[in-house]
Structure formats: C-alpha cells, structure tokens
Length: 311
Image (cartoon, rainbow, N blue to C red; front, side, top):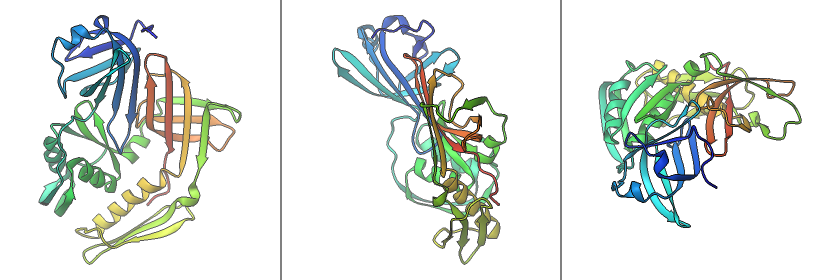
C-alpha cells in the first residue's frame, strides 16, 4: 500500500526526504515508562537515502497533522520483501553498562544529568523537585536507565524518553494539568475495554529501616498492607516520600481503559483524558501508552485511572 496521506512527513538528519521514499508502513509507539518510544517504518525506493550512508543513531522524525514523533534515533534497518524495515527509538542505541556508584550530597537533577549523559541523552524534570538532595544514595549494579527509572518512581514520577532526553515527570503534577481531551464512552462501544483489578491494589506501603520509617496509605483501597525493609533511606521524610511513590506506581495500574479510534494527534503519553460515561469507566484518566498508525490513520491508547487518596 503506497503512501496516501499528503501531510505525512519523514525527516532524516533534519532533511525532508518524504518524496525520496515510498512509505508503506509507519507506526509510532509512545509510552510513559518502562521502555523507550519506538518508530516502525517500512519504506520502498530507499536507494537515494542509502547513498547517504545511514548509520546507527542518525536522527529520524515523522510528523502528521500536528503529531510529531520528536527526535528518534536510527536503530536497525532490515531488508524485507524488496523494501526496508526501519526501527528507530527515542533512546540512543548505546551500551548500558551496569555500575556500582555512590552519590553523596547530590541532588536529583545532578544525578539525572550524570546518568542521562552516560547514554548520550539530556535530562529534563517536570513536576519533580530537582533540588531533592540525598545524603547517601547507592546505585546497586544497575544500568543508568534502570537506576533512574527506579529512583524517579520512588519520587512519585515516571521516566520517559522525550526528544533526546530522559524526562522525569511527576504523576501528581501531570494529573493536575487540564484535561487535553474529553471522551464520551457508551456501554456497548466495541472499540474500548475497561478492566478493574482494584482487588490487587495495596492499602498501604511501609518502609521500615534503621535510619527511617514511613507509611503511605491509599484511602480508596481495601487491599493488602506491604512492608519493605530492604530499601536504604536517609530519614523518616524520605521513607514516607518513597512509600508514597511505590504505592502510587503499583495502584495506578489497578484500573485500565484501552480504546481505539480514528487518528487523534493529541493522544500522547502522560496526557490527561476525562471520560464521560454512564459506565464505571467515567472519570479522569492518564494516558500510559499510545500506538499511532500514521499512515492508516488509527490511534490506540491505554490509560490508567488518575489516583487520589494516597497520603
């Protein structure tokens, strides 16, 4: 199937090459945490492009009707049925060595900058205090992305790859922003799925150590109480803060809403959606991941219920 969307643009190293290739498939997966955003392209007539000598981590970007993948980095090119399958990711394809590293008196912003720099990426913080200072923090034989994701989760946020950066985004901050979309949902809508697993949520998380003790509770859960004794903290305040982060990260996955629709360029990870419905799905949601089919014009989104009651 040849390209049919006139407003679909493909940029390679900042140059518009849309007319030099025939785009057969184009899908972008945008996720809020756990993995990098990725771009899956299939192109024909790429001979001119290959004369440029494409190499790993070259920059690729696709836009359509207000949607922008932002900077993606070339990962793999595979011949397929006379065409080329191209994979690009929002994180650079570099080694992620595991390391033991101690941080003494360092701020969250400083730690993020150092770890992101290991991966050739920048660092951004949104709704999380970069001035949070750790008396002593240990990186226990973890790669930089895994260490950062663990740390940001404990601080009540998610770690996302975004336009050449590792971005820490506070969940509470993102939930407090105005809803970008209002979705009306009928009970018999075939292209949506609401799943309620609040029976798996936790009622509380307590971090109990020699140096700090703190307990966070979810007023909306009747689940189990969890006690954690193997996470070193500086003091009671840090124990309480991290207990809240761990509890939120777990419980926000208890309710999910998946939906497929015609192409909607405004659906991106960590955007809030308000659902109007007579079903249990009514309320405020945060987009966790989106798959945008930029050629066929379809959007698939998975959302988590916005959390309240954790304190």
